[in-house]
Image (cartoon, rainbow, N blue to C red; front, side):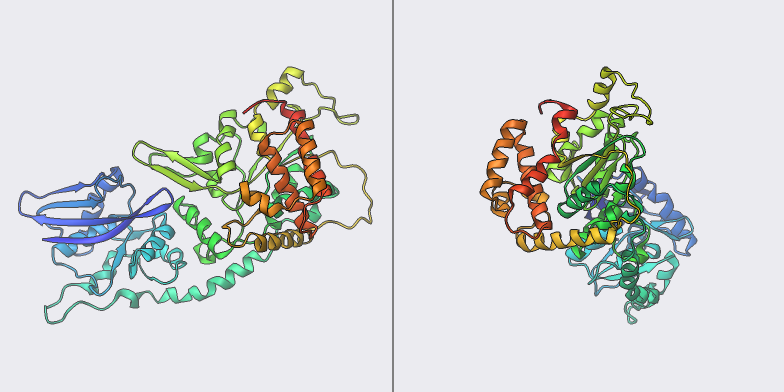
Length: 528
């Protein structure tokens, strides 16, 4: 006897449809799983055998062949367990699944027939919807995540025994009732949007906590308004980390499309745990330790999984103490910073992950952190050779991709009656600038000034003649690269948006240029 069901697996961060074909034939009892299964898929035989017996069904004592199609695609994970079990039961005539709807089945089985949650449910359910499936059968613990995709039925079960009312009846009785009736708890999903709104409306860390450093806060507003990369350089205790950690609080919330894309990435990586709060609305803030590997940063594995740059998609990637990272690790950032995607090639396929993030970094001016300091601060003890080795971790091409390079000095005396700059004030400026960008970039597929390039950059910037002359003279005198030239123009466009100007003036370009003064001071003239 033969049956065919549909399941799916993750390939990168996207779902791929897999047909589960089951054939029962005469011969010595044995099971063969074909179609490039990995170890976890092969072990499904023992999990399914125990689950079927412990749920009161009869395990077929025949020659069983299970084909996972397409056969040339590597299959991994335990998400095929439920589909394999139901394929066996349907082929042996013990159950009948609904015939009036096209169903996709995923889930891991325990030995007693219980269903364990699997990762990557959101992209798989999204795939099912786009592929014309009517419903998805999956573990109940994944139902809260799956129901975030609208327009498709979600059937969540906790145990294989819950399908017992689908047992094959007499021919005249027809198929059993729909399993949708056993999932009344999913009706509570109407409260999700309210929970998300409450959670996203609060700012836990505020820039009012940071005293002084108004010029740094100005730079952070510019970075957030146009999604420009930045690096803060200064001695220990000047508030570099404190300032950057508050950066997500002034960024706008994710749009519906962005929220779905980011949530799918976290689901594929197995890091989406709070499905009860709905799609992720806050922009991510990822701060990996400096001991991270290149694979951990950009993604990797036999079938690659998203790395930190993809988990920071549409958010902030914070690299604290930048020179402490391995140079090889830092160099892999060059492609995602430029192309906003990560491409990982394997022998049989190439995987592409989104990686559009704001890179925020901090570092000391030297290994001890006190170069150029004066009493009462400690005196720098670093030799020129140590300082050069310390700074050489950051290559010229990488620094060239950082738009704002800012020194953060030790705070001096401040006035007690000075009004604090709060996150709410900074966020209002960012939202105002983003609204102008959205209006100007409508229909281009872009959302931020930092995405502009080529002809679109020239059309969108609208440089004043004085600003153009200033750019030309600066290019020659400062020895800027063409990449730095374009990035200064984009930075000037963002500054003009903050000032509510349609044209980029010389004063906007002048401010953008002064954020690039660390190029030669720190790295020298290292060529790409």
